[in-house]
Image (cartoon, rainbow, N blue to C red; front, side, top):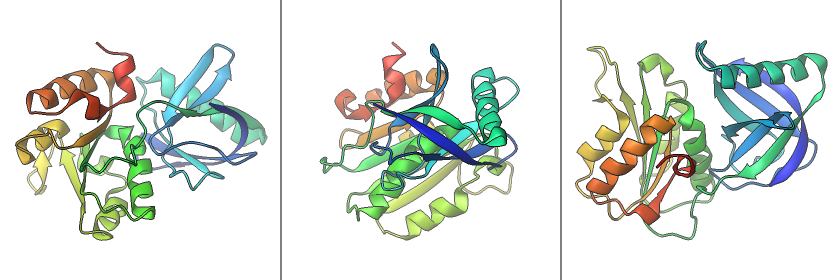
Length: 237
């Protein structure tokens, strides 16, 4: 873990309730694709967010913070960062946390699954894989409630177009009749598409109440627990 001071460069909306935060650390940040950082609000108050940047972007860190009225955890962190931006002061970060980073030495095909702003966890890995010229099959499933929440759809379609082994599969929970893709819960799209999950490295990010049942359903369809990765596992049974 690396403690850094960082300037808040910009805070901009990605959708109605999701904001991109750009942080410029005073020195290069050290992290692996798929790790997270903590924004330090106080000695005993640290808020964790996935790093959306790939590791080579170590001089500009990107966060995606979903801040709905019901999410005081995220809103308070966002307000804290806004104050630093307004006052041109530095935020304190703890960088390079988590144990669910990309396993680059593996040769197994990859499933990446994100619910909502869990997208930022997966984005870091997807961008890194593209940068290093990955030749492993990668299936990137991103689930949201409404199509308007696919704030990076065009970016990920371009990512998929960059490599014939990359596939981007958006999933809409509450789709209207014009949507032609997968609907419902994102992990059900995986279960529908893939008969057996035993061959895959699986990376997952989303609400804790989502990740537990997803893990169990995937194991029932052949996934190997030792090849499933989510930092939420440390906090759920």
